[in-house]
Image 1 (cartoon, rainbow, N blue to C red):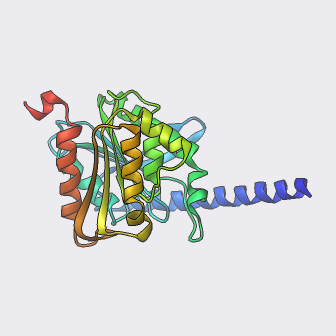
Image 2: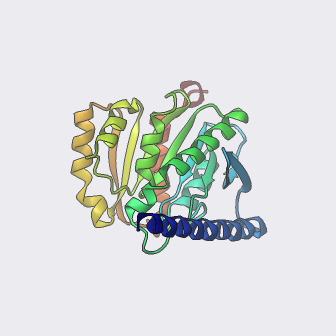
Amino acid sequence: MRYLACIVLFSWALVVAAADTTATRELEAAWRAAVDLDGEVIALQAGDDTAVAIHRRPADNDSLGGVVLIHGPGTNADSHAVVRPLRIGLADAGWDTLSIQLPAAYDDATSADWHAQAPMIEARLGAALDWLRQRGVDRSVAIGVGESGRIALRFATSRPADQLVAVIMVGSPARFDSDEEREALGGLARPLLDLYAERDRADVLDNLQRRATAVRDAKLEGYTQRAVAGATADFRGLDDALLGSVRAWLQKHAVATDAANP
């Protein structure tokens, strides 16, 4: 019986992987054909895994650093909610942005389903940072949207703080109550922005105090919890306010001293 269950699970995994590959290829084809993509489609190699990402150079080619974005379930590397405004707006503000396409999530996917893919997502994050470093961008920031915020946080502890200098979570429902998450907070040793919409989803708002308490217990310095006034979870109509909040925080916490004071 256990053998049969393993076969069923393995077969389902193959179906999911095939569907994910098809969805990614369709997105890549659409992005390459788009005349208004505002970026370049690139390939990232993470071990045996090849991932697609969208790179956008700084408007004036004088980079403040890199920003690597990882979207959440049900969205993609160029989603009009949150991801696209940040990847384009931050590039216009002087950052090298790289938005990674992650494995597809189905409508009934749970938080656990998404986090089961964390090793693959973290490998793609690492490949993105390496890709930027190979092009002379030595300092980067990771932005995780929704469920990906926790993944960005955990990944950051595997990289030196002078390479991955800060982490931003946008609309994160994290509770920070697991041993793994508390350990990550304790070892983060770099600034963390916990950004959310004033009218965000219930799981985001309900866990605000839990996150703040966990950070305080971990004695993490440089933590900011900030709301975008009037915004709903997708920040519709308030892209500029979202971008402005992120830009201001990055300017204070992530820009190298020589870049901030040319």
